[in-house]
Amino acid sequence: MTLDLFDKFDSILNDFNSLPDGGANPFTVSMEKVLSPTTAIINGQETILAGTNNYMGMTFNEECMTAAKNAVTELGTGTTGSRVLNGTYNTHKQLEDTLKDFYGCAHAIVFSTGYQANLGVIATVAGSKDYVVIDADSHASIYDGCAMGNATVVRFKHNDPENLDKRLARIRRTDPEAGILVVLEGVYSMLGDQAPLKELTKISKDHKAYVLVDEAHSIGVFGETGRGVAQAQGVEDEVDFIVGTFSKSVGTIGGYCVSNHPKFEALRLVCRPYMFTASLPPSVVASATKALELIANSNLRSKLLDNSMKLNKGLADAGFDMGTTGESPIAAIKVPAQDLAIAFWGEMIKEGVYVNLALPPATPNGLNLMRCSLSAAHSFAQIDFMLEKFILVGKRLGLI
Image 1 (cartoon, rainbow, N blue to C red):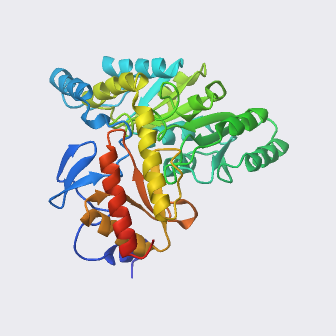
Image 2 (cartoon, helix red, strand yellow):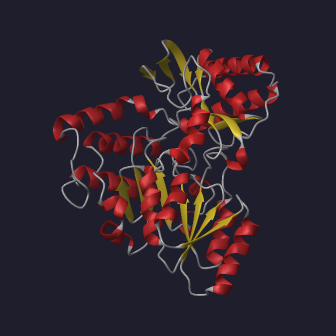
């Protein structure tokens, strides 16, 4: 019998099909109507959104929406081409200029998604004679960028400067002239922990390595002007490439990389995820440009972190086993078993709170997580409501 190409997915399908009948499915939930950055109608019920990564609440910002509407009217719905063909409009160049101003960098390149930004830069910059050294808890896009490229990949223990030093020293002993790219994240998405960038970048530079920092979950959130953890820890001058996304704090879709490397523009000629993907539509470009301008002068960062501290403290005080501390907009409850985590998610949605269900292999160390990502647009009253429902369901399921 010929092997079915889908047989290898049977165990995953079996797990999916074993989910409880009735109610919303955590992996196929549909928002029937989005009312605001923090509320939506799900299963006919108004629901607080506690898992959208909409950190600055920009999805309903009036200035961003007006910019997007005007762009559709003036330039249409899409470019129908890649950046190296017909897909570069003046507005794409303006967005890249806005990024250069935002970061104070000489170069900026915009991708159609944040995933493609990591995929393209990592796979292109590090060649067959080079090394990519990554944190063990790196995002899937970083791992996939490594898989797409030809460099030798080396992992180090999560947020462990000493282990990074050992890995780099071993590479240098073996191959003193090798090119090395160390890839870090400002904030790690599942548990919301910050990287010790000051220590990690120093070690990297001591071994003559280049440093790339993915600020996807930290742009807008940290730093005096919202540039991320590298700005907050004062190490921007030691970072060679900063990658980010527009799909979180910026409130739309797309990705980018900024750099001061004098040969950076070569990426436009050799980076396949940039060259062979249709460019961002004018409406997205316009709203992203406006959002970046607003974020640079925003006073929302302190409100966002106040919200995070309030939720994390409330959950910890209630007795939940927390994977987070409130140092980022992410709050994650550790749940001892997968079926219990799925049940937890289902009960929370019934109670009017949408939370991300995060399961292995997407999570570090095999954790089952109920993961919140807060917004500056959440009110304290909404966070009190979340806490009330978390405690209610936690007691109902015997977790607290």
